[in-house]
Image 1 (spheres, rainbow, N blue to C red):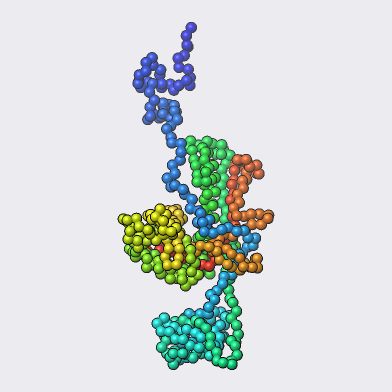
Image 2 (cartoon, one colour; image 1 turned 180 degrees about the horizontal axis):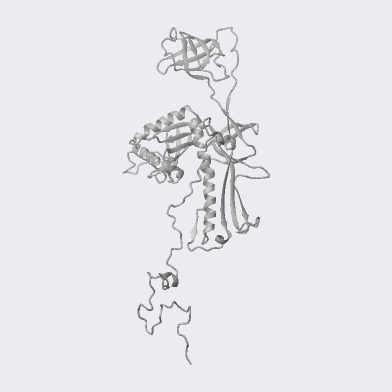
Length: 477
């Protein structure tokens, strides 16, 4: 008795013929380049291909979020709008006043506002070169015309006709006269912002969800496995979380020249960080210039410090910079420290100038004048898929600490970080970051659709309080 067929069907490809000895013959050797029509001796048909299991992370950590978590806070609100009030300056001053007579100046007035310089006030009047001190003896509050008696010169003829600056430094009255007439009521400036609704969505059908992929995937939030739809779902969530922050940074309100259809659709935007600083803060163009790194940047930086002196003078500030600007700061500080490059001498650094903390090629903090600065790279400005592709923002200076403001909802003064996010929430619904699953795949059985749908939603806005203390570094070259 013997075998009727030494090569039963499907036992091995017909092109592979066993041989009595281990020899490399065309009849028993796998081919890499076969696989034509009717040819079944392909490499892949016999063995799995040699594939790397892990996905190559060629862009590193791709998320750009975290900026707002570092500098601010998130707090709930229950209204369609957040309103806050900010203090105005304590002292009385006017810019761009005009000389309307030899002993008379006219100060500019805002709409529906009166001049608050009162009779008996002593004032300084300057055109930037010459300065005159005088006593206000007659004031037309409605028109802003102030008649003065000068102390050292006969009249105001030594001053320019326009562009005058006026501020009150005190008062003087003769013996036996009445007191100061009228009073100066404190004024405040009111600001508001409205939340926007952000949404995103991911969907995969049931058949694809059941398919196992060859490559092991991993994402920034720790999701891993051999299922592509897990990666896609995770990346959709990561992308949405980045959008929640990017919207707070980039958002704009509908302006007078904006598309009328925005108002019709009730999508009129919100005020983001960049828009708030450009409207109410300080903008500095071309820090260090295209050809002035190192010590040449110090003059630009001192100009910024002088501007901070005219505002709130917050002692501690944080710098979030693009890579190029961060290097400009490093070069600037290194150039001011002669021993930086060779001797390891102490640098302009915080943390008691300890060498291990401050003396390195990436300064984390330094002090200039009466201000402390902590700097870090802001990935959002470097990532080539976001602002790094545009390259027109070099960085932003954000004051640390909190501000005291009057909250219209609470009816009292509250302390808030200068930069913080408000999101819609109540006992019934928290819209800070919502996600839910619908469909009939992946554990959800809410509809007859043969798919898993993952939904994301957030409703939020950014509050930039004390924007006069922020500085936006822009590039125009």
